[in-house]
Length: 303
Image (cartoon, rainbow, N blue to C red; front, side):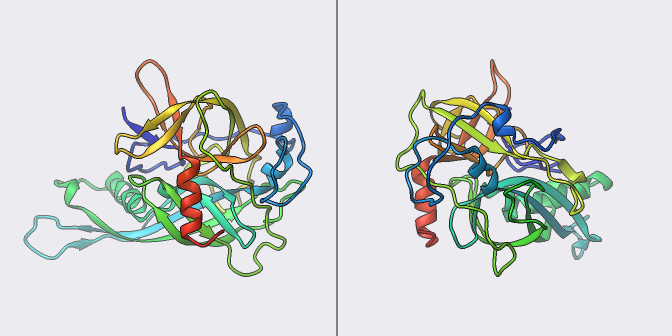
């Protein structure tokens, strides 16, 4: 079995089929429950923190709900015009985090990509229709992304807000996306996280953060549970089956945690949760590298 993006996509995933998992949790800070140490002295993303600040991480991450609506175009027998389906809708969930002070959110590219959205709509259509040539199907889709935070102390996005997709780096090129909160939808906005200067090295201790997927049952009325903090270390630098460089980590990435930050012991982002590989002797998980992340932010004028 190949790589599996870690968004909760109950209907389809372009790289691999994704399973969903409901998160169980209470109102306590999950980072505190796992004894994540330390406090930093500055709230500036440009400051060099000396130790991790779990509260800042909690306050920065956002839960993302992507709704893909569209129409499937079925060529049928190929003797006439394409048959246009009734509207089909698919919902998936991911994690994002604040990378700038002006409402910029980073997540994984496959969480909001148009190709993945098209695939989700087609997969939903196939659940109810027998099709002779599935490869011939196409779809017209519209993608809407909403952001929210758990209703806990420190949260500044107290209601669902619509975020704009500013740029997407497809999975085969690096799996990153930039979203923007426009206007006063969340004021004050969540704090931006500092980003490490260098890529991680094998053996470095890291923590992967994200919201384990709520699957297709999520709605705007859904109560968002606090994020999970998964500790581990960097195993090696690795190329994906499509040749994209990333880093293997042994911290577990559950569906829905895609797009969340992986941070070092000082709370600096060293990568973005991308995909998991299942099968063989053991499971392992992959994050994007720091260099690719910094380049992506610079190309979009975030810095």
